[in-house]
Amino acid sequence: MYSKNKFLAASLFIVFTCSSFRTIYSSKKETIVGKVIAITDGDTFKLLTKDSIQIKVRLASIDCPERKQPFSKRAKQFTSDAIFGRTVTLKVLKKDKYRRLISNVIYDDSLVLNQELIKAGLAWHYVKYSKDSLLQSFHDTAKASKIGLWQDKNAIAPWAWRDAKKRKSK
Image (cartoon, rainbow, N blue to C red; front, side):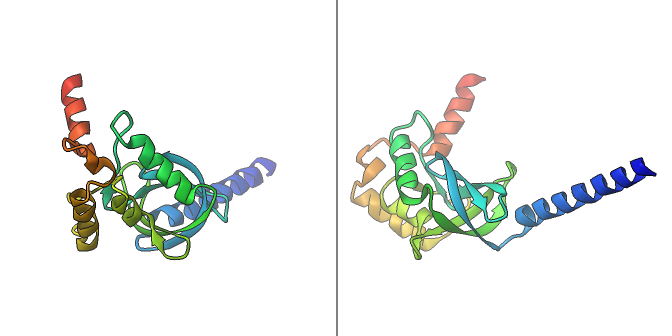
C-alpha cells in the first residue's frame, strides 16, 4: 500500500510538473514576463519567470554576429547593457527546434530589443524568417549610415558565415 501511494504521488508530481512546463513552452502568441539571468550572445538569453522556470529566448526576426565574427562581442554587450538583470516582457511567436522561445522582447516599458539591435547596426534583419517592413527599414537605414557592423563593407551575414563554416568542416 505504501509503495502504491508513493508511486501515485510521484506520478502526480511528474504530470503536474510536465504540464506546467508544457504550458510555458507550447503556447504561441503569449506574453511572458521575467527577469533576464544570463546573456548567451547578442540574440539569445535566459529568462527566469516568477514561477522560477528558466526559459531560453531567441530574438525573433534578427540575427546577430556569431562568436568569432566582428561585432559579436559588441552585440552581446549591447544586449547585456539593455536587459541583463532586468524584468522584460516576451511576446512569444513560437518555439524552435532547440526549445527556445522565439520572441520580441520589450524592455524599459516600450523599447523592442529586436529593433534596437538593428538600429545600432549590431544585427541583420533575418528575412528568411521575417517580412517585417519596419525591421527592414531600420536595417536599411543602419546600413546606409554605416552604423555598427555596417562600417565593414564586407560584413558577412551570420547565416552565410555559419554555412561557410559547415562547408569547411566537411
